[in-house]
Length: 208
Image 1 (tube, helix red, strand yellow):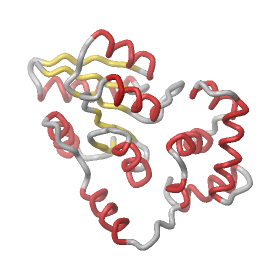
Image 2: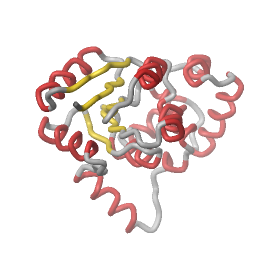
Image 3: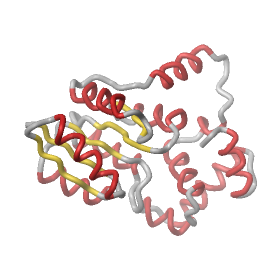
Image 4: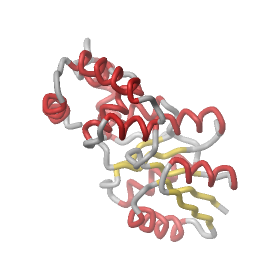
């Protein structure tokens, strides 16, 4: 029996994937979690063949969660299932230990393919991502300034772009407000922006 854990804060998304998995894999156990804390509680109770993880959830440090998985559950197969742009996020999460990245907008057959490949302990990388990786490896210089950010800085940028305040971000990532402020200043310096409006314009230019 295959065992799945769906980590997503949207009930409708979890319900849809649950129906898909239950139709393909019979019998199967499909558990759900709505944030990092509930996901960790589930993992303490049971082991899973596959975890499907969204990367934008309230009160969840997703990069931190991936780091925890890597240390505590090194054999855990994680498939990122997200609306966030693949060209920006996929490489970072694959580097963090995810086995694949699939968009929620992907065709049903492609989602099934991604799930099957990760279950077989293979990596899933879309054709578009493979082309992007090939292009970046052949390029003399990566001009995307966002790729100069560390994983933590990139996570804070994502939250700033989502409209969260520094205090909200500190709460979500379990950091001091002053620490987030320092990160923000360093991020603005790296990206050569001076305010949130400029940050949003730069992000839009890279389809972030």
